[in-house]
Image (tube, rainbow, N blue to C red):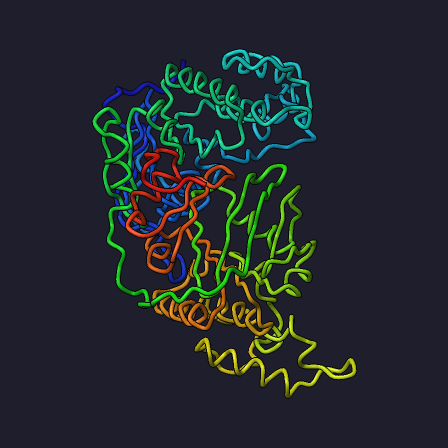
Length: 511
């Protein structure tokens, strides 16, 4: 048993009026969260609700701009991860931060290994204590095994043993079952019960409603960085929880458009990847905006990267205008009229350090060169054309793209690919991290592109955007198409239910 004892009615950790702002984005706005000893609290919300920011504040990675954190009733300041660890807070992430080249015992006690009287690491004591911790949670492997020899589930057990080695009061589990088999998930549930019996307060973050209702005692709902509600899980059902998560009207910033769909331009059949997705098939018509929605880990971006040739599917057929095309690289995709605007503009989209005009013309050098020599006047002309079409706000086209705002960087990336004159454009989270004015401009331009006959695929985690911009929506869950939704069925509740695996079968057309 932990030496920290509190009444089950008194929170181990309380976060009150916590605020956190990043440039242009208010990630948390006056949120609160209470974690109780011997209980599991599920933190629930859509992508972007503020869950990850909350975890990073609790673990000392971020510091809040306002509000108070209390541990056992006393205010604390968690300036570093070491402060959080000393306060008894530890996190077990979906991808555990462990070291493959160290032994199990070394991973458990890294940074706080027992020492001899001469100040050296006491290896015998370290392995003995590690064995005791592993036995406590039912882990069968040897303390001298190297981490690289263990599977994902056993690595989770090592991370939990490490948490227990510092006598953690609070254990944060962030999507802990995402990469586990059914048997491993059952074993994790048993471990959660063991931790509860030891009086640990557990913060459980999951998009899987069956998990939440199976192991959680309490729930807290965030939406758009704000606190919505909390309470006992026994006092709520799935429908009520979904409505809390998405309880907002689709606003009216989206351009009105009458879709004039043309002939089928893209057909994808039997797409599969060894680890990311399987059984993917869909079609896309000229003038159509096809939305892709899903929760974290659904496989949407991975599918788009395969369509663009960044990764290779294990099987599947791509047809463009009815003809089978083999796409082994992004160059193949561009040559066949498919372009991809990635979610991560800084790393995958814009080339920081190059001026705006060169970013825009980079994939279209064949149009701006002659006899192997670049013609700068042609580059400027092409760049100016697309910069004006997207209402790009910049001092000059020779300005470093890294000095632009996020919204204007996004416009540069879109302009770069539009300059190749594609047939299909894939927009992955096209308005992520940009202000409301830039979002409206991107939405207007998307509608204009579709109106001109371009086929658009839009991946988005923002439900209002998905509903406001899409003609059809494909919902993905755990690497597969869960449903195709359109018309009157295209509602926030329907999308979330399908994404979470709780939708009635009659609400849409399963793929």
